[in-house]
Every structure is written in C-alpha cells, then in structure tokens.
Length: 73
Image (cartoon, rainbow, N blue to C red; front, side):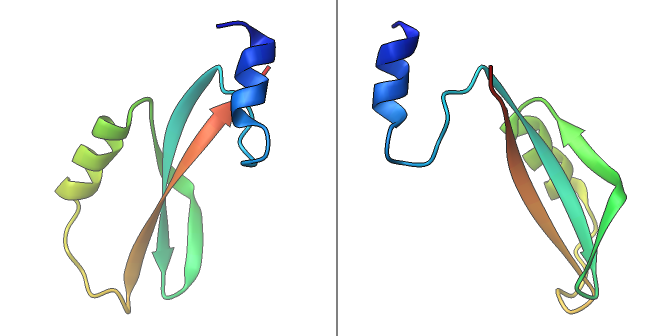
C-alpha cells in the first residue's frame, strides 16, 4: 500500500496514517492528572497487563487513562 492510498483510507476520520504507536497510562488522583511517572508501553497488551496489576482503589480517589500515541511522518 502506498502513502497516497493510506492517506485516502484515513481521510475524513481525523486519524493520520501512523508509522508506529505506543501507549501511555496516566494516573489521576482526585481529579488531577499525575504526568510525572506515567507508564509508557510499546504495545496495548503490555500496558493492559500493567494496568491489571495495579491495586484496585476507589474511583473517587484514583482513576487511570490509557492514551494511544501515534508517531507520524
């Protein structure tokens, strides 16, 4: 698949063609994001395994957001 075809497939959905992707898990403590020390992973499976290993705390105290990050040319 060439770049023009790849661009056409993603046109209109707001997603740029990606070269690679990684994942970032951000911890929120009482509604405030804690970016320093956020967990970075190369695969979805790796970040989900890490997330599943975290202690289960009440959502009113700690929540998590997993972000997918695209590296585009």
